[in-house]
Image (tube, rainbow, N blue to C red; front, side):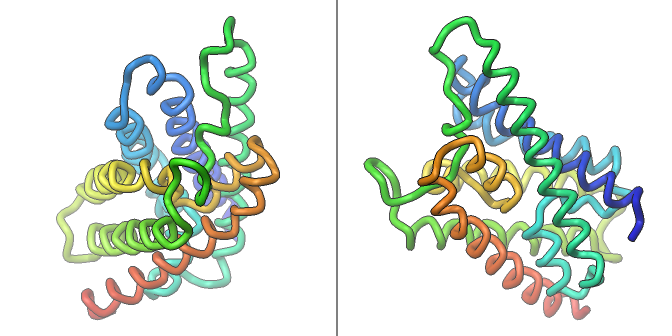
Length: 225
């Protein structure tokens, strides 16, 4: 197990989750809106991909790691270490945002529950809708990831292609599932929410992973790998 790769995944995961949670808690209530929230994880991915992606491959997401395993781009034996690092990074990011939120001078700012992905409640989408959007967006994300990082893709464009696709998929999914797309991000938010969010967390592991594996298999066929 390469310690540098594990560290790079932890740092990248931390940065992407911190950017998204900060946007949800601070930028959106201040008038940033949905587009600003969607841009945050995409821009964070671009930055971290250029910063540490050359060290680890820049997955920053357990679903992407497993999708790349399915696509034949990543060794299964290394997946567990990557996923553990991504989880630690995401939870550390949530912890830091939680501490920052605790320093607010009034109660007008949302808590980390605003970042949690749940379903079935009042003004929320159904389980089927949530699973479908999570499956679809992560499948497409892995297809973009594998295509943009293939040997025939133009050099240097992968971070931009993947980062802006992350933004696009957040715009698609924020209203439906709060755009989990990433089991580590979903876990980090659920830990700081309540038992209800934790009870529904399984959906935000199963659906993204199924989507990522689907995307990995499709991309493997398309790229003849």
